[in-house]
Amino acid sequence: MGRAISRCGTRGAPARLASALGYAVSPGGARIRPTILLAVASACGEDRPEIGDAAATALELIHCASLVHDDLPCFDNADIRRGKPSVHRAYSQPIAVLTGDSLIILAFEELARIAEIDAARSARLVLALARRTGMPGGICAGQGWESEEEIDLEAYHNAKTAALFVAATQMGAIAAGQEPGPWAELGARIGAAFQIADDLRDTLCDADTLGKPPGQDDLNGRPNAVARYGVQGAMSKLKDSLGGAIASIPSCPGEAMLAQMVQRYAERLTPSAPMPRRTVPGE
Amino acid sequence: MGRAISRCGTRGAPARLASALGYAVSPGGARIRPTILLAVASACGEDRPEIGDAAATALELIHCASLVHDDLPCFDNADIRRGKPSVHRAYSQPIAVLTGDSLIILAFEELARIAEIDAARSARLVLALARRTGMPGGICAGQGWESEEEIDLEAYHNAKTAALFVAATQMGAIAAGQEPGPWAELGARIGAAFQIADDLRDTLCDADTLGKPPGQDDLNGRPNAVARYGVQGAMSKLKDSLGGAIASIPSCPGEAMLAQMVQRYAERLTPSAPMPRRTVPGE
Image 1 (tube, rainbow over the protein chains, first blue to last red):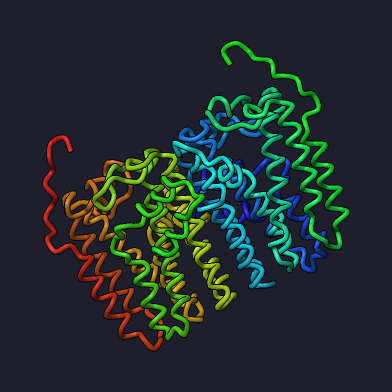
Image 2: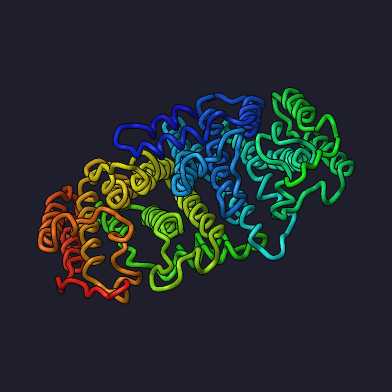
């Protein structure tokens, strides 16, 4: 990802925007989506690792773009992201809007560059990523649901969170020259688990652990699995989703390795101490 | 373009965002960039018009996205665009940010779709469009210059305005299976002429003719050719740019037709009555 970003900091580029692009992608978070993408590509027996690398970079660029725009005052108005000031706080709102835009464009540019290796896979990756990023079913659509008076909860969660996990599994398959169709379910189930785990962490963890203020879903009136099912109900849903994810892995050379990876995520995602977060007065 | 947008309004999509996408692209402006793209493709003897059509759609989607984001309160804070409320005024700021994002993504999706006709051209079109849209030299970079304390005027104008005209001529050539390199100068010169004509109109025309409030460059402290060279000096620069554009047209089957097109634009772009706009008190 550093290479894609550093190409933007050449002479003749506006320095603050170039700097903000680097700021927005580092230090990275868990990089869970590109890790899943690369695991699926490897499990499918990829023949050209450069394609998987470019696909993983593109996916993480889109994820970072979405964080920068979601943090804007007109959405979550988040001051802190990954333990440091959000892009609009560290730079400005104009720079934050342009950073998100530039990261989106950079993602597609990254995918187009691999056409010299395999033009057909390059185009399929662009299509798969666009479908899970834009309208009508990608993360833009997910964010768009928050402007509706009545939210279609299933469409909302599918688009807002699961979409980029489906992109991860499907792009991993495409990068390895395989059909993406059978890989959608694994992505959707991991995405659903991730959403529930995120809701649990938002309820159970403090700001230091989260790297951002907790309780944001309540604050922003967003649907949350813990509010809906309670802590124990949400924990049970999380386990179901992860079990379903493992069961849905398509037959492939790396099937066992992938099952192990999902199991490891299951352990990491499940909050170890399901104690209600201490509420600080005035929080 | 209508087909690309209407795919976003399916069941299961958030209705307000879907509606805003249609709102942002209609009624269209002069569609000058796609018209140039199609003229170049035709002049190059295009063999698959569907590719040129998709490229023209993608380019106009990017242009519309840039207008929606540029109008946001943190940039131009424009209430009116093309004679009707801007997207953030008609809908909301969140919807306007997401509309811009979705239009950008839709543009690349549109280009990826033509891979089934010609995957190599599809990828080259994605690269050409990304380069002129993002960082370090596209319209995002152009807008980014406005956040710098010292503006590199040449880089600013090249990125802010000329970039999408260079995209138009180069994508036209790529759509027809030709090399884009020789077509950059024509785009750059038309872009420079367009920028000067825009500056002249911003100084000389009233709100009804412009479809937006005049004098915005002065108001936003942006560099303007009229402020720099005076009205007569800017008119002379405009004529030079258009003459240079015609001279730069690469040798191709439709060379004469293209020269006629640029001549027609020259007549339309040149303000007919170079009278200073009346300044209304309190404007």
